Length: 375
Ligand SMILES: *Cc1c(COP(=O)(O)O)cnc(C)c1O
Image 1 (cartoon, rainbow, N blue to C red):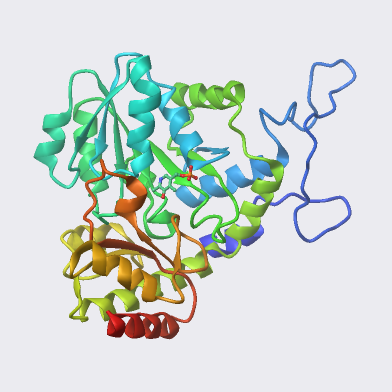
Image 2 (cartoon, rainbow, N blue to C red):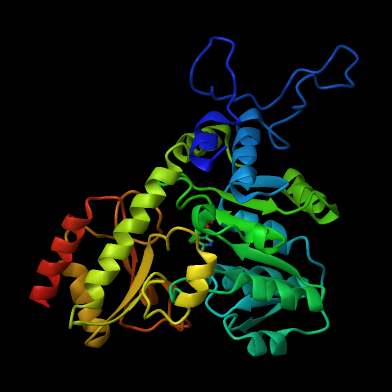
């Protein structure tokens, strides 16, 4: 069954009333058998599992082709569970432009527990090999990256990881399984901020981990959640399942709109550079063309001529692009990343990150035309 069909028809909860859509099971606790020893439906308590959480996890596991999925209260809660499965003294190599808060949580929350990390350019295999130490346990990658839109050759990183017995994690929030399935390329764990394209409407916070195998590591991370408690609510899981029914339809429009907007902006003389994996001018376009199937996603960054001042002005002149952080919603968003990331950020001052929505692209282009004219 194809993904669009599966997301509508599979892993739904049948309600005794005959309701066509899945119900929301808000209960925190579930009835046991008379001898107290068995749980007829397998549910005990909602911190361990809940029917809506279970349905969501089955859907996401199928999307990524994984053996198991664990859904979390946010993308960072999912990341935290992976870091908490490491031991004191372990070392992580992270892509140098990994989602900013990933680096922040490792050095603010986990440095005191003995975890350390090194940043490396994952598009350069030699640089990556040099960053690996004898105590490196994890290679943490993100493709396309945020906000430099670098595309990592996931298979090449997996090959290096195997030589050094490191686990690989791919943050697949931006590419989504509609365009790239990291587990098929040998990655061990996929991470999602389901807040973004899975939710799709900027109104649910959530995260997920998908595992290639159900092994000891997977069990350990399940326990991090069961005992740590970073579970999503049944309502959020239900909303996410509802959003996933339109996931493939939304992704196709996000991606087609982004491609058209990128092509338009690339020809504009006031724009220095457009970073979008679908453009032949993108430094890793060849890798993207091989690795991203059927499209290049909805995220792009632009470098505006005239530095920070012009970048901020251009932002201000746009009417349809809301100035806000985050991404993956139906509405287009624009953000000056350096201001969000703070003074330690390596992001250029004249970079604007755009989450291209599913509006009619001619309106988006028209808006840029009038804004560029005023610049
Ligand atoms: C937003 C985001 C996260 C963090 O997820 P939250 O749901 O905000 O906790 C992680 N990785 C990427 C690539 C993101 O875009």
